[in-house]
Image (cartoon, rainbow, N blue to C red):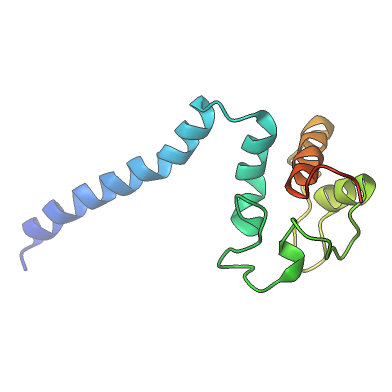
Length: 121
């Protein structure tokens, strides 16, 4: 295999990877998604899934990652949800107090409640 051929085949693959990596950010920036869903997708969906099911490669089988049910380690009240978002859960979930404003935390609390059917439990 010549070096020229290797470079010629590598460049398009690299360009495609860069373009695809930017698609999510562009879609998020210019989409009509509500602010709470944008925050969810940016900070939470990687582990909890876009739908809150927890069905992700990292957390599949962890019942606490599924936020649509009533199996919550730290409780499901608004106060408990807010605390977990800010402080995290030791060894399982990072806290976001340094990355999110109080308003953003409130938006995420509301979004999590929507995932659970809207009611406080």
